[in-house]
Image (cartoon, rainbow, N blue to C red; front, side, top):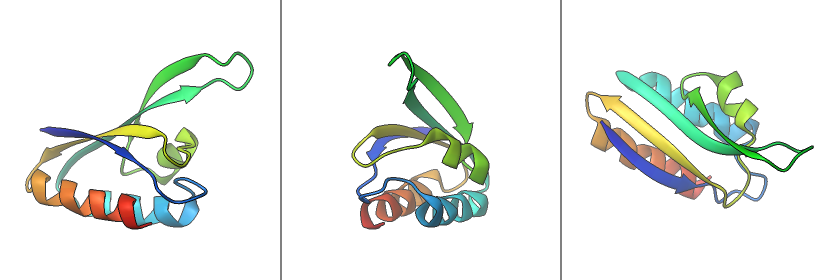
Length: 94
Protein backbone atom coordinates (compact mmCIF):
# COMPACT_ATOMS: atom_id res chain seq x y z
CA UNK A 1 0.00 0.00 0.00
CA UNK A 2 1.25 3.47 -0.85
CA UNK A 3 -0.15 6.87 0.02
CA UNK A 4 0.60 10.30 -1.41
CA UNK A 5 -0.78 13.81 -0.99
CA UNK A 6 -1.53 15.54 -4.30
CA UNK A 7 -3.04 18.87 -5.39
CA UNK A 8 -5.03 19.60 -8.54
CA UNK A 9 -3.47 22.25 -10.80
CA UNK A 10 -6.48 22.80 -13.10
CA UNK A 11 -8.15 26.19 -12.53
CA UNK A 12 -11.58 24.62 -11.90
CA UNK A 13 -10.34 21.70 -9.83
CA UNK A 14 -11.21 18.05 -10.33
CA UNK A 15 -14.24 18.69 -12.54
CA UNK A 16 -15.97 16.32 -15.00
CA UNK A 17 -13.27 15.82 -17.65
CA UNK A 18 -10.25 15.28 -15.40
CA UNK A 19 -12.42 13.31 -12.95
CA UNK A 20 -13.45 10.96 -15.76
CA UNK A 21 -9.78 10.45 -16.71
CA UNK A 22 -8.96 9.86 -13.03
CA UNK A 23 -11.71 7.24 -12.67
CA UNK A 24 -10.75 5.56 -15.94
CA UNK A 25 -7.15 5.20 -14.71
CA UNK A 26 -8.40 3.97 -11.31
CA UNK A 27 -10.51 1.30 -13.00
CA UNK A 28 -7.43 0.04 -14.87
CA UNK A 29 -5.64 -0.49 -11.54
CA UNK A 30 -5.92 -4.02 -10.13
CA UNK A 31 -6.47 -3.05 -6.54
CA UNK A 32 -8.06 -0.54 -4.22
CA UNK A 33 -8.05 3.20 -4.92
CA UNK A 34 -9.13 5.48 -2.06
CA UNK A 35 -9.28 9.28 -2.09
CA UNK A 36 -9.34 11.19 1.22
CA UNK A 37 -10.26 14.87 1.25
CA UNK A 38 -11.06 17.46 3.94
CA UNK A 39 -14.44 18.66 2.75
CA UNK A 40 -15.70 21.98 4.11
CA UNK A 41 -19.34 22.39 5.13
CA UNK A 42 -20.52 25.54 3.33
CA UNK A 43 -22.92 26.47 6.14
CA UNK A 44 -20.69 25.95 9.18
CA UNK A 45 -17.18 26.15 7.70
CA UNK A 46 -16.41 22.92 9.53
CA UNK A 47 -13.99 20.48 7.86
CA UNK A 48 -14.68 16.78 7.73
CA UNK A 49 -12.34 14.10 6.37
CA UNK A 50 -14.22 12.18 3.69
CA UNK A 51 -13.11 8.93 2.01
CA UNK A 52 -14.35 7.90 -1.43
CA UNK A 53 -13.75 5.02 -3.80
CA UNK A 54 -11.46 6.34 -6.54
CA UNK A 55 -13.18 4.08 -9.06
CA UNK A 56 -16.52 5.88 -8.59
CA UNK A 57 -17.21 8.91 -10.77
CA UNK A 58 -20.00 10.08 -8.46
CA UNK A 59 -17.75 9.61 -5.44
CA UNK A 60 -14.91 11.64 -6.93
CA UNK A 61 -17.17 14.45 -8.16
CA UNK A 62 -18.96 14.59 -4.79
CA UNK A 63 -15.70 15.57 -3.09
CA UNK A 64 -15.59 18.91 -4.93
CA UNK A 65 -11.80 19.04 -4.97
CA UNK A 66 -10.77 22.59 -5.93
CA UNK A 67 -7.51 23.91 -7.38
CA UNK A 68 -4.52 23.65 -5.02
CA UNK A 69 -6.54 21.83 -2.35
CA UNK A 70 -4.59 18.79 -1.15
CA UNK A 71 -6.10 15.33 -1.14
CA UNK A 72 -4.64 11.95 -0.24
CA UNK A 73 -4.52 9.12 -2.75
CA UNK A 74 -4.09 5.58 -1.42
CA UNK A 75 -3.33 2.66 -3.74
CA UNK A 76 -3.22 -0.96 -2.62
CA UNK A 77 -2.54 -3.64 -5.22
CA UNK A 78 -0.37 -4.76 -8.12
CA UNK A 79 1.90 -2.17 -9.71
CA UNK A 80 0.86 0.48 -7.17
CA UNK A 81 4.07 2.50 -7.60
CA UNK A 82 3.69 2.62 -11.40
CA UNK A 83 0.07 3.66 -11.08
CA UNK A 84 0.90 6.31 -8.49
CA UNK A 85 3.25 7.87 -11.05
CA UNK A 86 0.46 7.78 -13.64
CA UNK A 87 -1.94 9.48 -11.21
CA UNK A 88 0.67 12.14 -10.41
CA UNK A 89 1.16 12.86 -14.12
CA UNK A 90 -2.60 13.07 -14.65
CA UNK A 91 -3.17 15.44 -11.72
CA UNK A 92 -0.20 17.67 -12.56
CA UNK A 93 -1.02 17.93 -16.26
CA UNK A 94 -4.81 18.30 -16.21
